[in-house]
Length: 464
Image (tube, rainbow, N blue to C red):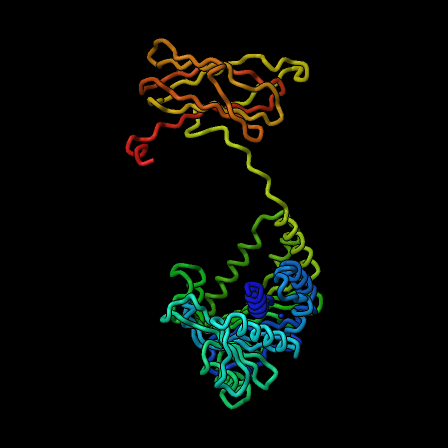
Protein backbone atom coordinates (compact mmCIF):
# COMPACT_ATOMS: atom_id res chain seq x y z
CA UNK A 1 0.00 0.00 0.00
CA UNK A 2 2.93 2.33 0.53
CA UNK A 3 3.62 2.01 -3.18
CA UNK A 4 0.04 3.08 -3.94
CA UNK A 5 0.40 6.10 -1.69
CA UNK A 6 3.63 7.03 -3.43
CA UNK A 7 1.85 6.74 -6.76
CA UNK A 8 -0.90 9.08 -5.61
CA UNK A 9 1.64 11.51 -4.21
CA UNK A 10 3.46 11.43 -7.53
CA UNK A 11 0.22 12.16 -9.37
CA UNK A 12 -0.55 15.08 -7.05
CA UNK A 13 2.97 16.44 -7.41
CA UNK A 14 2.65 16.23 -11.16
CA UNK A 15 -0.63 18.13 -11.06
CA UNK A 16 0.69 20.94 -8.91
CA UNK A 17 4.44 21.23 -9.45
CA UNK A 18 5.42 20.02 -12.91
CA UNK A 19 4.85 23.14 -14.89
CA UNK A 20 2.69 23.94 -18.77
CA UNK A 21 -0.62 27.68 -24.11
CA UNK A 22 -2.14 25.33 -26.50
CA UNK A 23 -5.01 24.99 -24.05
CA UNK A 24 -4.41 28.30 -22.30
CA UNK A 25 -6.09 29.51 -19.14
CA UNK A 26 -9.87 29.42 -19.49
CA UNK A 27 -11.41 32.25 -17.37
CA UNK A 28 -14.79 30.49 -17.67
CA UNK A 29 -13.43 27.78 -15.35
CA UNK A 30 -12.48 30.27 -12.61
CA UNK A 31 -14.97 31.56 -10.07
CA UNK A 32 -15.75 35.30 -10.22
CA UNK A 33 -14.77 35.79 -6.57
CA UNK A 34 -11.28 34.28 -7.01
CA UNK A 35 -8.49 36.27 -5.40
CA UNK A 36 -5.66 34.17 -6.82
CA UNK A 37 -5.08 31.92 -9.84
CA UNK A 38 -2.32 29.56 -10.94
CA UNK A 39 -2.48 27.93 -14.37
CA UNK A 40 -0.06 25.30 -15.70
CA UNK A 41 -0.17 24.30 -19.37
CA UNK A 42 1.63 21.00 -19.90
CA UNK A 43 0.97 20.99 -23.65
CA UNK A 44 2.90 24.25 -24.12
CA UNK A 45 5.60 23.06 -21.75
CA UNK A 46 6.21 19.87 -23.67
CA UNK A 47 6.35 21.79 -26.99
CA UNK A 48 9.06 24.21 -25.83
CA UNK A 49 12.83 23.75 -25.74
CA UNK A 50 13.20 24.50 -22.03
CA UNK A 51 10.06 22.51 -21.22
CA UNK A 52 11.38 19.41 -22.94
CA UNK A 53 14.53 19.59 -20.82
CA UNK A 54 12.41 20.00 -17.67
CA UNK A 55 10.14 17.08 -18.49
CA UNK A 56 13.20 14.90 -19.18
CA UNK A 57 14.63 15.83 -15.79
CA UNK A 58 11.30 14.97 -14.09
CA UNK A 59 11.17 11.62 -15.83
CA UNK A 60 14.69 10.78 -14.67
CA UNK A 61 13.90 11.83 -11.11
CA UNK A 62 10.73 9.74 -10.94
CA UNK A 63 11.88 6.69 -12.89
CA UNK A 64 11.63 3.54 -10.84
CA UNK A 65 10.28 5.32 -7.79
CA UNK A 66 6.85 3.63 -7.61
CA UNK A 67 7.92 0.17 -6.56
CA UNK A 68 6.78 -3.18 -7.91
CA UNK A 69 3.09 -3.05 -6.98
CA UNK A 70 2.08 -0.47 -9.59
CA UNK A 71 3.97 -0.07 -12.84
CA UNK A 72 3.53 3.43 -14.33
CA UNK A 73 5.29 4.81 -17.40
CA UNK A 74 6.14 8.29 -16.18
CA UNK A 75 6.70 9.76 -19.65
CA UNK A 76 3.35 8.49 -20.94
CA UNK A 77 1.53 9.58 -17.78
CA UNK A 78 2.85 13.14 -18.08
CA UNK A 79 1.57 13.27 -21.65
CA UNK A 80 -1.99 12.63 -20.43
CA UNK A 81 -2.06 15.93 -18.49
CA UNK A 82 -3.19 18.99 -20.46
CA UNK A 83 -3.72 21.92 -18.11
CA UNK A 84 -4.05 22.43 -14.37
CA UNK A 85 -5.83 25.49 -12.98
CA UNK A 86 -5.99 26.31 -9.28
CA UNK A 87 -7.86 29.23 -7.75
CA UNK A 88 -9.23 30.34 -4.41
CA UNK A 89 -10.76 33.21 -2.46
CA UNK A 90 -8.56 32.94 0.63
CA UNK A 91 -4.97 34.16 0.77
CA UNK A 92 -4.25 33.10 4.33
CA UNK A 93 -0.82 31.51 4.91
CA UNK A 94 -2.58 28.85 7.02
CA UNK A 95 -3.14 25.84 4.71
CA UNK A 96 -6.14 24.73 6.80
CA UNK A 97 -8.12 27.79 5.74
CA UNK A 98 -7.32 27.69 2.02
CA UNK A 99 -10.40 27.13 -0.12
CA UNK A 100 -11.04 27.06 -3.85
CA UNK A 101 -10.55 24.34 -6.43
CA UNK A 102 -8.04 22.57 -8.63
CA UNK A 103 -9.29 21.89 -12.17
CA UNK A 104 -7.39 19.26 -14.16
CA UNK A 105 -7.89 18.76 -17.88
CA UNK A 106 -6.30 15.95 -19.82
CA UNK A 107 -6.92 12.84 -21.86
CA UNK A 108 -9.40 10.12 -21.05
CA UNK A 109 -6.48 7.97 -19.91
CA UNK A 110 -5.69 10.48 -17.16
CA UNK A 111 -9.17 10.10 -15.66
CA UNK A 112 -8.96 6.32 -15.91
CA UNK A 113 -5.54 6.20 -14.21
CA UNK A 114 -6.57 8.54 -11.39
CA UNK A 115 -9.89 6.83 -10.65
CA UNK A 116 -8.28 3.39 -10.79
CA UNK A 117 -5.69 4.40 -8.17
CA UNK A 118 -8.40 5.85 -5.92
CA UNK A 119 -10.54 2.74 -6.22
CA UNK A 120 -7.58 0.54 -5.31
CA UNK A 121 -7.06 2.78 -2.31
CA UNK A 122 -10.62 2.27 -1.04
CA UNK A 123 -9.96 -1.46 -1.02
CA UNK A 124 -6.44 -1.53 0.37
CA UNK A 125 -6.68 1.42 2.81
CA UNK A 126 -10.36 2.15 3.60
CA UNK A 127 -9.38 4.40 6.52
CA UNK A 128 -7.54 6.69 4.11
CA UNK A 129 -9.57 6.41 0.89
CA UNK A 130 -13.34 6.39 0.66
CA UNK A 131 -16.05 6.81 -1.98
CA UNK A 132 -18.34 9.84 -1.79
CA UNK A 133 -21.76 8.44 -2.61
CA UNK A 134 -24.07 11.47 -2.19
CA UNK A 135 -22.93 13.31 -5.33
CA UNK A 136 -24.39 12.93 -8.84
CA UNK A 137 -21.01 11.82 -10.20
CA UNK A 138 -18.08 9.67 -8.99
CA UNK A 139 -15.97 11.24 -6.25
CA UNK A 140 -13.48 10.05 -3.64
CA UNK A 141 -12.11 11.43 -0.38
CA UNK A 142 -8.58 11.09 1.00
CA UNK A 143 -8.20 11.56 4.77
CA UNK A 144 -5.37 11.43 7.30
CA UNK A 145 -6.22 8.68 9.83
CA UNK A 146 -3.47 9.85 12.20
CA UNK A 147 -4.90 13.35 12.60
CA UNK A 148 -7.02 14.27 15.63
CA UNK A 149 -10.75 14.51 15.10
CA UNK A 150 -10.74 18.31 15.43
CA UNK A 151 -7.86 18.55 12.94
CA UNK A 152 -9.25 16.01 10.52
CA UNK A 153 -9.24 17.31 6.96
CA UNK A 154 -9.67 15.59 3.65
CA UNK A 155 -9.31 16.21 -0.04
CA UNK A 156 -12.09 15.32 -2.47
CA UNK A 157 -11.41 14.31 -6.07
CA UNK A 158 -14.40 14.30 -8.39
CA UNK A 159 -15.02 13.02 -11.93
CA UNK A 160 -18.04 14.95 -13.31
CA UNK A 161 -19.44 14.34 -16.83
CA UNK A 162 -17.52 17.38 -18.09
CA UNK A 163 -14.00 16.56 -19.37
CA UNK A 164 -12.29 17.69 -16.18
CA UNK A 165 -11.26 16.43 -12.76
CA UNK A 166 -12.05 18.66 -9.77
CA UNK A 167 -10.10 18.64 -6.51
CA UNK A 168 -11.54 20.49 -3.48
CA UNK A 169 -11.59 20.31 0.30
CA UNK A 170 -15.40 20.11 0.70
CA UNK A 171 -18.57 19.14 -1.14
CA UNK A 172 -19.80 22.73 -1.21
CA UNK A 173 -16.60 23.93 -2.87
CA UNK A 174 -16.72 21.02 -5.30
CA UNK A 175 -20.32 21.70 -6.36
CA UNK A 176 -19.62 25.43 -6.71
CA UNK A 177 -16.59 24.72 -8.91
CA UNK A 178 -18.65 22.46 -11.14
CA UNK A 179 -21.41 25.11 -11.46
CA UNK A 180 -18.77 27.60 -12.62
CA UNK A 181 -17.56 25.16 -15.28
CA UNK A 182 -21.15 24.52 -16.42
CA UNK A 183 -21.84 28.26 -16.65
CA UNK A 184 -24.56 28.28 -13.98
CA UNK A 185 -22.42 30.27 -11.51
CA UNK A 186 -20.50 33.54 -12.09
CA UNK A 187 -17.06 33.07 -13.62
CA UNK A 188 -14.09 35.35 -14.21
CA UNK A 189 -14.98 35.43 -17.94
CA UNK A 190 -18.20 37.24 -17.02
CA UNK A 191 -16.55 39.66 -14.56
CA UNK A 192 -14.49 42.13 -16.65
CA UNK A 193 -14.16 44.50 -13.68
CA UNK A 194 -11.96 42.05 -11.77
CA UNK A 195 -8.23 42.89 -11.91
CA UNK A 196 -7.56 39.17 -12.36
CA UNK A 197 -9.75 39.14 -15.48
CA UNK A 198 -7.56 41.92 -16.90
CA UNK A 199 -4.44 39.82 -16.38
CA UNK A 200 -5.89 36.70 -18.04
CA UNK A 201 -5.82 38.42 -21.44
CA UNK A 202 -2.00 38.31 -21.32
CA UNK A 203 -1.49 34.55 -21.09
CA UNK A 204 -0.79 33.79 -24.77
CA UNK A 205 2.20 31.49 -25.04
CA UNK A 206 2.53 31.07 -21.26
CA UNK A 207 2.90 27.64 -19.75
CA UNK A 208 2.92 29.09 -16.25
CA UNK A 209 0.59 31.91 -15.25
CA UNK A 210 -0.18 33.20 -11.77
CA UNK A 211 -2.15 36.23 -10.61
CA UNK A 212 -3.39 37.52 -7.29
CA UNK A 213 -4.91 40.53 -5.59
CA UNK A 214 -2.77 41.96 -2.82
CA UNK A 215 -3.71 40.24 0.45
CA UNK A 216 -4.68 42.17 3.54
CA UNK A 217 -2.76 39.61 5.58
CA UNK A 218 1.03 39.71 5.92
CA UNK A 219 2.16 36.88 3.67
CA UNK A 220 5.80 38.04 3.79
CA UNK A 221 7.80 39.38 6.78
CA UNK A 222 6.94 42.96 7.65
CA UNK A 223 10.23 44.50 6.47
CA UNK A 224 10.80 42.24 3.47
CA UNK A 225 11.23 43.90 0.03
CA UNK A 226 8.18 41.98 -1.23
CA UNK A 227 6.04 43.52 1.52
CA UNK A 228 7.13 47.06 0.68
CA UNK A 229 6.33 46.53 -3.01
CA UNK A 230 2.93 44.95 -2.31
CA UNK A 231 1.98 47.96 -0.18
CA UNK A 232 2.04 50.01 -3.39
CA UNK A 233 -0.09 47.65 -5.50
CA UNK A 234 -3.62 46.27 -5.69
CA UNK A 235 -2.87 43.17 -7.77
CA UNK A 236 -0.14 41.47 -9.75
CA UNK A 237 0.56 38.67 -12.20
CA UNK A 238 3.42 36.72 -13.72
CA UNK A 239 3.58 34.67 -16.91
CA UNK A 240 6.36 32.37 -18.10
CA UNK A 241 6.45 30.66 -21.46
CA UNK A 242 7.99 30.43 -24.93
CA UNK A 243 7.34 32.43 -28.09
CA UNK A 244 9.32 31.48 -31.16
CA UNK A 245 12.94 30.85 -30.22
CA UNK A 246 12.76 32.79 -26.94
CA UNK A 247 11.60 32.05 -23.44
CA UNK A 248 9.78 35.03 -21.98
CA UNK A 249 8.80 36.24 -18.54
CA UNK A 250 6.15 38.95 -18.13
CA UNK A 251 5.36 40.37 -14.69
CA UNK A 252 2.77 43.09 -14.08
CA UNK A 253 1.83 45.07 -11.00
CA UNK A 254 -1.34 47.15 -10.87
CA UNK A 255 -0.49 50.11 -8.61
CA UNK A 256 -3.01 51.59 -6.19
CA UNK A 257 -2.36 55.09 -7.60
CA UNK A 258 -0.35 56.94 -10.25
CA UNK A 259 2.12 58.08 -7.60
CA UNK A 260 2.64 54.50 -6.41
CA UNK A 261 3.04 53.37 -10.03
CA UNK A 262 5.94 55.81 -10.35
CA UNK A 263 7.49 54.45 -7.15
CA UNK A 264 7.13 50.84 -8.31
CA UNK A 265 8.75 51.72 -11.64
CA UNK A 266 11.75 53.26 -9.92
CA UNK A 267 12.08 50.32 -7.51
CA UNK A 268 12.04 47.73 -10.31
CA UNK A 269 14.38 49.79 -12.48
CA UNK A 270 16.79 50.04 -9.57
CA UNK A 271 16.65 46.29 -8.94
CA UNK A 272 17.33 45.44 -12.60
CA UNK A 273 20.16 47.99 -12.72
CA UNK A 274 21.73 46.41 -9.63
CA UNK A 275 21.49 42.96 -11.24
CA UNK A 276 23.11 44.23 -14.43
CA UNK A 277 26.13 45.34 -12.39
CA UNK A 278 26.58 41.92 -10.77
CA UNK A 279 29.96 40.40 -11.50
CA UNK A 280 29.88 37.10 -13.36
CA UNK A 281 32.34 35.25 -15.56
CA UNK A 282 29.47 33.55 -17.43
CA UNK A 283 28.80 35.57 -20.61
CA UNK A 284 25.43 33.90 -21.22
CA UNK A 285 24.31 34.58 -17.65
CA UNK A 286 25.32 38.24 -18.00
CA UNK A 287 23.31 38.52 -21.23
CA UNK A 288 20.33 36.92 -19.50
CA UNK A 289 20.44 39.41 -16.61
CA UNK A 290 20.73 42.38 -18.98
CA UNK A 291 17.72 41.26 -21.05
CA UNK A 292 15.25 42.65 -18.49
CA UNK A 293 13.19 45.80 -19.23
CA UNK A 294 10.78 47.81 -17.04
CA UNK A 295 7.93 49.96 -18.40
CA UNK A 296 4.90 51.87 -17.10
CA UNK A 297 1.49 52.39 -18.72
CA UNK A 298 -0.85 54.39 -16.51
CA UNK A 299 -1.16 52.56 -13.19
CA UNK A 300 0.35 49.35 -14.58
CA UNK A 301 4.05 48.60 -14.21
CA UNK A 302 5.50 45.72 -16.24
CA UNK A 303 8.76 43.81 -16.22
CA UNK A 304 9.66 41.83 -19.33
CA UNK A 305 12.46 39.45 -20.13
CA UNK A 306 13.06 37.47 -23.33
CA UNK A 307 16.02 35.17 -23.87
CA UNK A 308 17.04 32.37 -26.19
CA UNK A 309 15.42 29.09 -25.12
CA UNK A 310 18.33 27.09 -26.49
CA UNK A 311 20.81 29.08 -24.39
CA UNK A 312 18.64 28.68 -21.29
CA UNK A 313 18.56 24.92 -21.84
CA UNK A 314 22.36 24.91 -22.11
CA UNK A 315 22.65 26.92 -18.89
CA UNK A 316 20.25 24.56 -17.11
CA UNK A 317 22.28 21.51 -18.18
CA UNK A 318 25.48 23.17 -16.97
CA UNK A 319 23.93 23.97 -13.58
CA UNK A 320 22.59 20.42 -13.26
CA UNK A 321 25.98 18.91 -14.05
CA UNK A 322 27.60 21.20 -11.47
CA UNK A 323 25.04 20.20 -8.85
CA UNK A 324 25.59 16.49 -9.57
CA UNK A 325 29.35 16.70 -9.07
CA UNK A 326 30.29 15.32 -5.65
CA UNK A 327 31.61 17.96 -3.30
CA UNK A 328 35.30 17.71 -2.55
CA UNK A 329 35.87 16.29 0.94
CA UNK A 330 36.93 18.86 3.51
CA UNK A 331 40.46 18.39 4.83
CA UNK A 332 40.73 16.93 8.30
CA UNK A 333 41.39 19.46 11.07
CA UNK A 334 44.82 19.67 12.68
CA UNK A 335 43.76 22.05 15.48
CA UNK A 336 41.50 21.69 18.50
CA UNK A 337 40.48 24.77 20.44
CA UNK A 338 42.37 28.03 19.91
CA UNK A 339 45.32 28.08 17.51
CA UNK A 340 48.53 29.49 19.05
CA UNK A 341 50.84 28.87 16.08
CA UNK A 342 50.65 27.64 12.48
CA UNK A 343 53.47 27.46 9.92
CA UNK A 344 54.66 25.78 6.75
CA UNK A 345 57.61 23.48 6.29
CA UNK A 346 60.71 24.90 4.59
CA UNK A 347 61.55 23.45 1.18
CA UNK A 348 65.08 22.11 0.72
CA UNK A 349 67.27 23.15 -2.23
CA UNK A 350 67.24 19.48 -3.29
CA UNK A 351 63.94 18.13 -1.89
CA UNK A 352 64.09 14.74 -3.59
CA UNK A 353 67.42 13.77 -2.05
CA UNK A 354 67.27 15.72 1.23
CA UNK A 355 66.77 13.81 4.45
CA UNK A 356 63.22 13.74 5.80
CA UNK A 357 64.50 13.65 9.40
CA UNK A 358 66.20 17.04 9.50
CA UNK A 359 65.24 18.75 12.74
CA UNK A 360 63.83 22.26 12.95
CA UNK A 361 62.46 24.21 15.87
CA UNK A 362 59.89 26.89 16.59
CA UNK A 363 59.40 29.03 19.68
CA UNK A 364 55.88 30.07 20.67
CA UNK A 365 55.73 32.73 23.40
CA UNK A 366 53.03 33.99 25.76
CA UNK A 367 50.82 30.91 25.66
CA UNK A 368 48.14 30.91 28.39
CA UNK A 369 47.78 27.43 29.85
CA UNK A 370 45.54 26.06 32.58
CA UNK A 371 46.01 22.90 34.56
CA UNK A 372 44.45 20.02 32.62
CA UNK A 373 44.44 21.89 29.28
CA UNK A 374 45.01 19.86 26.11
CA UNK A 375 47.86 20.96 23.83
CA UNK A 376 47.34 19.56 20.32
CA UNK A 377 50.31 19.13 17.98
CA UNK A 378 48.98 18.85 14.45
CA UNK A 379 50.38 18.52 10.97
CA UNK A 380 49.11 17.82 7.46
CA UNK A 381 51.37 16.23 4.87
CA UNK A 382 49.71 17.64 1.71
CA UNK A 383 51.74 15.14 -0.28
CA UNK A 384 54.95 15.83 1.64
CA UNK A 385 57.05 13.40 3.69
CA UNK A 386 58.76 12.93 6.99
CA UNK A 387 56.78 15.51 8.98
CA UNK A 388 56.36 14.74 12.70
CA UNK A 389 57.05 16.23 16.14
CA UNK A 390 60.16 15.16 18.04
CA UNK A 391 60.11 17.13 21.29
CA UNK A 392 58.14 19.80 23.15
CA UNK A 393 59.48 21.96 26.01
CA UNK A 394 57.05 24.02 28.09
CA UNK A 395 58.81 26.71 30.15
CA UNK A 396 57.18 29.27 32.51
CA UNK A 397 57.39 32.77 31.00
CA UNK A 398 59.01 34.11 34.20
CA UNK A 399 61.66 31.38 34.01
CA UNK A 400 62.15 28.02 35.62
CA UNK A 401 62.67 24.36 34.75
CA UNK A 402 60.90 23.27 31.56
CA UNK A 403 58.40 20.47 31.30
CA UNK A 404 59.66 18.17 28.52
CA UNK A 405 57.71 15.77 26.30
CA UNK A 406 59.96 13.39 24.31
CA UNK A 407 59.02 11.77 20.98
CA UNK A 408 57.86 8.54 22.64
CA UNK A 409 55.33 10.60 24.65
CA UNK A 410 53.90 12.22 21.50
CA UNK A 411 51.42 9.69 20.16
CA UNK A 412 49.60 10.79 17.00
CA UNK A 413 46.50 9.54 15.28
CA UNK A 414 45.93 10.08 11.54
CA UNK A 415 42.93 11.05 9.42
CA UNK A 416 43.15 11.55 5.62
CA UNK A 417 46.75 12.70 5.57
CA UNK A 418 46.38 14.78 8.72
CA UNK A 419 47.85 13.96 12.15
CA UNK A 420 47.09 15.21 15.66
CA UNK A 421 48.94 14.40 18.87
CA UNK A 422 47.19 15.61 22.06
CA UNK A 423 49.21 16.30 25.21
CA UNK A 424 47.61 17.04 28.56
CA UNK A 425 49.26 19.87 30.48
CA UNK A 426 49.84 18.90 34.15
CA UNK A 427 51.33 22.22 35.38
CA UNK A 428 49.90 25.24 37.15
CA UNK A 429 47.84 27.95 35.47
CA UNK A 430 50.00 30.65 33.90
CA UNK A 431 51.82 32.00 30.85
CA UNK A 432 54.37 29.74 29.16
CA UNK A 433 56.82 29.55 26.28
CA UNK A 434 56.63 26.48 24.04
CA UNK A 435 59.72 25.34 22.19
CA UNK A 436 58.77 22.77 19.56
CA UNK A 437 61.24 20.53 17.73
CA UNK A 438 59.95 18.77 14.62
CA UNK A 439 61.07 16.94 11.48
CA UNK A 440 60.89 19.31 8.54
CA UNK A 441 59.32 18.16 5.27
CA UNK A 442 62.05 18.82 2.65
CA UNK A 443 59.46 19.25 -0.14
CA UNK A 444 57.93 22.25 1.67
CA UNK A 445 54.38 20.90 1.41
CA UNK A 446 53.58 19.98 5.02
CA UNK A 447 51.74 22.35 7.39
CA UNK A 448 52.19 22.37 11.18
CA UNK A 449 49.97 23.81 13.93
CA UNK A 450 49.82 23.99 17.73
CA UNK A 451 46.51 24.63 19.48
CA UNK A 452 45.20 24.67 23.05
CA UNK A 453 41.82 23.65 24.47
CA UNK A 454 41.09 24.65 28.06
CA UNK A 455 39.76 22.03 30.48
CA UNK A 456 36.00 21.88 31.01
CA UNK A 457 34.67 23.56 34.17
CA UNK A 458 34.09 21.14 37.03
CA UNK A 459 30.30 21.53 36.92
CA UNK A 460 30.21 20.70 33.24
CA UNK A 461 32.45 17.69 33.72
CA UNK A 462 30.13 16.33 36.43
CA UNK A 463 27.13 16.65 34.11
CA UNK A 464 28.95 14.69 31.46
